[in-house]
Length: 464
Image 1 (cartoon, rainbow, N blue to C red):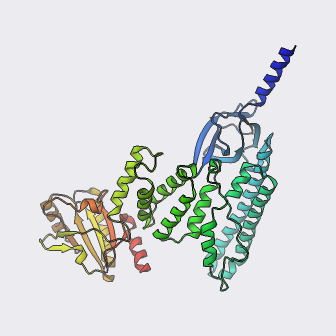
Image 2: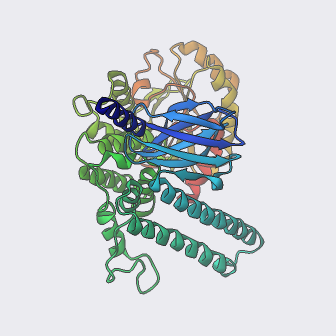
Image 3: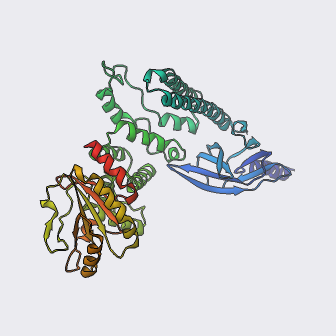
């Protein structure tokens, strides 16, 4: 009798320890994709198929990661949910793929979380409708006073969202999502510091205080805080709103933030990978300076053990290519001769701007793009832009024939020896390669796409 009772107790305990989430899918017959957030990324955990007779699907949790998860189907996320602890055993339900119909059973954490999410989506929807109205008013009039009521409404909605987050934190202090909300909120500003000065302009004291204290609430040792979709927007807001868009300011800010994180911690690794990737693929002209700094300071051999060798070599090679033509710095030397054999020294040229076009007469894409590039240069030449076209093919005589056929009025250059030693410092791969230099021969723009050249020139000219 005692043995049977013991088996019953053990069996009940095992049933209660099931590590699973049951999804009740009323009116939903398509497979459900379950994944989790991590920094700026989304990872797939499982694809679960509904039992149409029982109208449910079961997510068996194999690798437990406490954090925020999502359920998606047919290419869109239906809703988010929380996994607080393991083992877990609770039920989530949804009716006909309607996000506002999601409910939770046996999970007080998700009941509170889903209620907060519904309120948040409601306010975001209201704000979107008001923003559409603002756009309509702006198309009709340039009067800033005309949109003031709508701007005030959006500010009120933003405050309601902030107040609801604070209320959630206070009501559920033990929840993981409460810690996420409190971590990714700016610290309370002392009453003596106002965001605006007495003239209504941004207060530099407020800016400096926020730059230093912005991450005070983040526990960079708690890896769980990365398993949500809150960290990256919070970090981006810091970089976009509190850091001046200058390479030196951005570099200082990134160094300051990374210094707050324990080295080799999940936050350190995730943030370093995220910002390196961001500036590696960023169209902002000075992103190359930031990228090279990140590689040189943090991702040299021995400094980033989490990187595989191929990735590290790629980063170092790309930084090496960037170094000789960093935006804002002087361009490499270029001493060649034109088709008549007359010498040309780039750094002795007195032009206000110099448009550099590296190409090969054997490159089909170059031959297609050159006429438009040349016409664009002709259109802006009167304001003092010198055009310099540099041949990268080693067949000198073939180039001379090509130049003679085109009869372009810009300066055509080539290396009679065919050695083309300029190619490496000027990074002339993926032709045509286009640079714009200022009067001091500093790089203003690099690797300009031919189809974007006219807009880039217009932008630079307007700025200067």
